[in-house]
Length: 421
Ligand code: PMP
Image 1: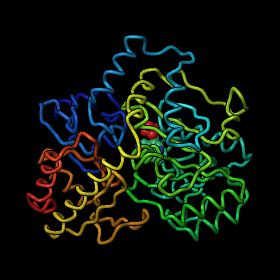
Image 2: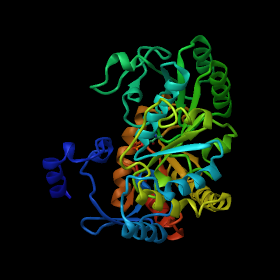
Image 3: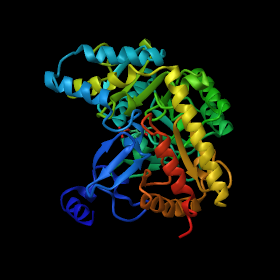
Image 4: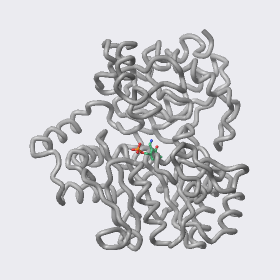
């Protein structure tokens, strides 16, 4: 592993193509994976790990799922990219619309970042306003307008959270506190320059933290009153927490929805969509430009279609029931170990927070959680359980995680106190 890591660093910037893979948050050498099968990942030394990262939530049926692989193989034999209109795009859009009826028109991209970036341009284009409101701890990809942190004091103009972002652009983003209904209401009522409010309705990027119903309701009401668009970033929660995503669970329809991950069956994909009156502003119908050589790529569409065709309310009922039972047992094991830990969950996504109480926003996550998570992560890795390598992430279950794998995981949790060496 050390050799692979050494060589990667000689050739790739920082040794990785996405920073979290470098294990900076947990320390140690990243594990290089070679193969995935069902609930398992196999490293380059043939070590086998039960995977709870699942390509950051993309793999609802686990690794190398038979039907997905077959669909990809079939499509590959017909051609991998045409750069033309295809029927696959329409077919996948139709499947998405069955679950997300508010997405009357859809545009596919090749990543979640691209979809968010394009949705923000669209929101600015149709509202003629410039300000973007987001929430602390939310992640919406690495576009300039979103890599912004709260300025001095919340409800002020944001400042860049990465070098290379012009402060004059970051100033157009405001970062508020997640689940703080009063603050959001006050801010939205005070200003007339807001193009959109974007958030994960069930946050996955500060660990799993679901929004409060009244918070989302207030955002819906105030954005409508202001003539701003409400954007739900469901890149993680869409097709993960249930059929129809978080918006169906809460019964709140945003103006625009962002999807990714699961809808591409593990291939690169993103999508945004919403009411026709907004989406018609996109080029070629309208004046907001957006494009992509590989957008709606036939391989990604085929893989996505093979997944979405199998989904239904019943499918999620089964997956979520299995997940709830697992979380209950995990809570019991952690309690027996005397750990101060809570499990925040939504459907088949969850985070173990080493915290006295369940956090409801970013600043409620204790600093000590990360220190503990680091030890916990390596302990679980020793037991051949692979978790996302950061305490700010969500873990995921798939249909491929059977009783055997879940029992082994509980055993690893309970073997010794995972936090005490
Ligand atoms: N939005 C959310 C909620 C995400 O979790 C992510 C990525 N994890 C993105 C957007 C960006 O997607 P991508 O990494 O495909 O660009």
